[in-house]
Length: 428
Image (cartoon, rainbow, N blue to C red; front, side, top):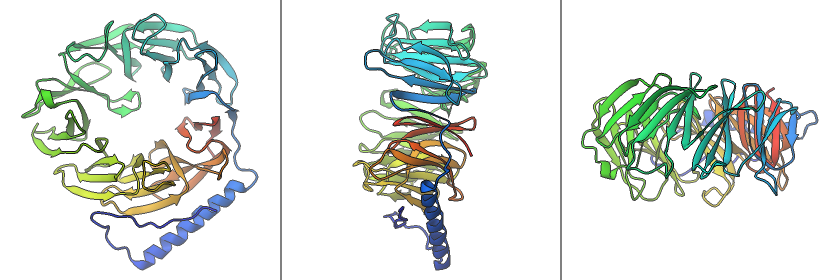
């Protein structure tokens, strides 16, 4: 049985009272939905996987109509496999070393990268493969791949030594995905910091912060600078990283996760955040910055830095859908909840809108829908569903050997989960 737990939590400030009639209606609806889902999990005929692998799976993804799997072996670094979505083998390629990773497929090209030493002896490398055959198209040593856009890959040339030395100029280069031919190049001053906003490796822009406090945004396809602003009072000695979200730039400071927040329209410092105990600021809505730690989640007004709300019981953030923040607990000792749970919160007020006990987020979602899982007690079998953070509805994807906390992704009408091996379903 799946219990619907207490929806109260310690808040600052507390949410506005909800009329009793709405509370009763919400609880009845939630109990009905969860009970129906629990019954469905045991009912014969639940959607079966279209393909599974029992073990030795490091990573898997569906891209451009193909399933790409990274496998490990006991006596070798393992191999990369390309398959049809229903599992038919297309090609394999040995991994030269365990640090090699298959990142994505774009424009018919699969990208394999190596960190900390490639087969050629370089500290970093990028290899492009034909997605259909696995044949090598081109290779670059001393390069890191940061993203793709418009049929081009954006690389950072890190030289033959340590690619992260702050006293070296930063060399950026965009290349044609299939040929590796250069499309544009740019050299930034030594110590410049970079950001890569977008959806994973599909980047929308290249954000740059130089040591003189100049922020600029660059188009990743053309290389053209589309925005420039100077940050007033910027101190290069007190800057470690930066992020742009909406109309603000957050600049991290060393020694802790403290940060300066600037208005990009004026370049003015609007507020400062001081802490040494959490994991830094992250955007959690159109008008909110949040921070997470062992003490829970705290939200701040993005414009003024004033405390907006806080919750102590949960510290895992599974995703954001507009003004709906999906968070919860993986059931480990890092959270006060000490059990798996999913909670949907209004990012503006901190009010709890929905709760699913004994379910866990898989860190995969598109739009308002998030992939979640529920594993049978003491078993490796479980159910994967698509949870709608706005309506509270659930679509069951299927049942399989997913393990207690699988990593799942939704792409091209499929759901892929890596936990106890690999499980692939087609969306209902």
